[in-house]
Length: 409
Image (tube, rainbow, N blue to C red; front, side):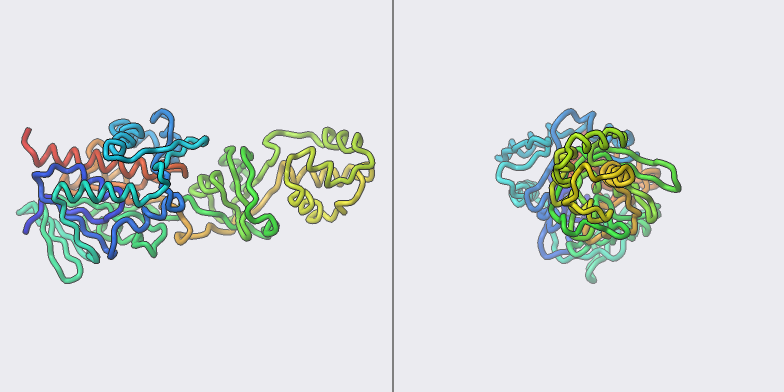
């Protein structure tokens, strides 16, 4: 059988593309795993942070340097339209205080069930354990020949929705990029995104699980500040994490310097010095907790790391010690060693080069029958539902344009 459309990848982008292609067309989804949506079922800890609340215009700043380039893709099928699609099919949603949106059941499986049901109703053919190894385009026939597991398929249109490299054990192992190369598409440099960061001489193993909100973080490279943002951080047993660190990870390189300001403001030494003098005989760790709002365990560790006895009285703290304390509070500085790698990355930075894609259609510039959706494209969003929104938005646009070409109006 020659299909109208073959889609490689049974994640949210691939399935949503299939859901929105006209029923008149013969559609085949090739999935390398035994089941669909393995990585998707892990999203948001299995709870599925499907998108973010607020105006879609505010999304653009959450895709690194490429947000403006995908403006029309997001506007054409925005967060409210995505929610409506699933609401119309029986899924209710909740929006948390941080504007992250989840299905009311907090189960990614409920979203996947809807996608599978729509695909079934549309007559989409899904083949499992179908690892695509080779694809070629036969120019004189305008047909793609797709080979995997010793089987050959043909189609008039070919959609790459194979994801990136994050969580490779789920099947998202970067193999889709090789298929893109076979079809003459350039792949930009690949690296982990939304990933924890390891730093040199990490001192906070004892604080594992402790998080702070609205911390100021600055990134320096060769003594030049390249980034400054505010947000939430998390200490783990061996590295830095939390939403802000994850979002910044796309910019970080080895030997960059990261500075944490736990007060999120500029404090002069004299201010802390006067505060401590007024506390007189109160222990320094007790006073610091009041001054900073940091946890007692954290302030004790700060004092330990700069060799100050936490039982020392405030009146006994000299000016040099005051400067050391303040430096750890507003300039806690670390050297980046590495990120935690693709096994712990939530997304992939890099992918199908945007210069090779017609972003008005999501087809390749060198072949208007070749299409790309979701994480395989060089687009990576912040944590908070932005990557799934792009997956669904790009899938919708791709499907609509395939329909425009294949179905006469």
